[in-house]
Length: 245
Image (cartoon, rainbow, N blue to C red; front, side):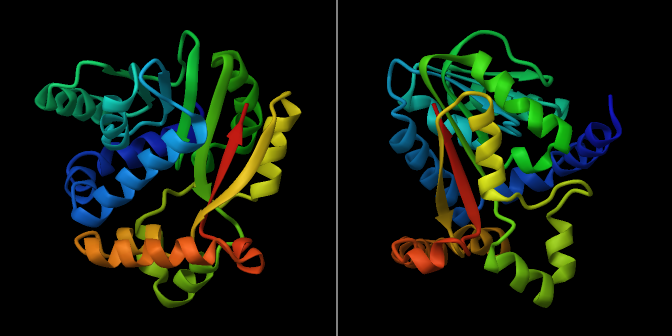
């Protein structure tokens, strides 16, 4: 295992040994995850016949919300602790069409491949290789969807200025913000038709900072939706989506 993967594994084994389970279950974070699921369904066209693969699924909180809308969800993650939790939650909720596997490789073909806050954890060489691997995993007509922090995000600059300690608390040693255009270009280079969308400005950061404040998250999401309609503001969004076919 290379050094980046080893550090990521060590960090996430700690994260998924109590904190994540509590944090991700809070009302604002739950509302954020539900919004993500709605967005995935909308932009990928996933439906009752779709097989979905999730890269870096963590404890499966997004995947278990997605499962009732599709035929099957397969989640893979490097962390054994995360996979144990995801499997336990699937069993507790009686969700039979979600399967979770520990590791870094997936087998088979999928109608949709998703990567939620995953790409920015990859080392540069791994990120460069990923689009080719994704292309091999997509069935005919399949769609890839990712969501990651933008290097141009205003919220990141403000956070590093005002709350640098808290920002570092929620970051692994190797993760970073990505350039949206450069990331999309990697998928185009693999022969996929990729385009970008901005996801939000303040709603995701707010959910992370105030996980119990569902009403605050919802107000921020409404404000984000309005701001995303302003072209001159969009480039400063917090998180960006790559949709590739």
